[in-house]
Length: 117
Image (cartoon, rainbow, N blue to C red):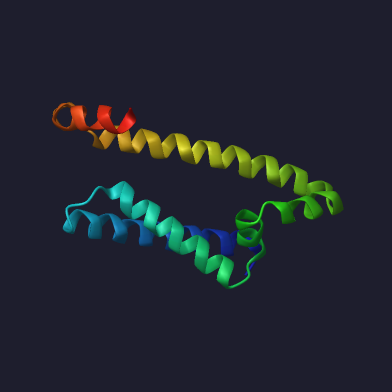
C-alpha cells in the first residue's frame, strides 16, 4: 500500500468513528461537538502512545524544530498543518453555531454572562 492509500484508510476509519461518536452523543442527549472533541483526544493520545511521528510532533511542537532544520519539505508540511488547524477550528466553531438555538441561548444567557464576568 502506498502512502495515499494508508491516509485514505485512516481518514475513512476516522470518519466512521466520528459518526459513531455522534450517534452515541445523540443517544446520551449530549452535543455532538462533545463527541468530536473526545474522539480527537482519544485518537491523538493513541497515536502518540504508538509513537507515530506525526502525533509526536503534534503533541510536542519543540521536536518539530529539529525536523524543520533537517528537511526543507518539513517547512511546507508545517505550513500546511497550521492552515489545516485553523480551518478545523473554524469548522468546529461553525458546527457548534449551527447546533445552538436562540431559545437555548436566551435560557442560559444570564448564567453565561455571570460566568463571563
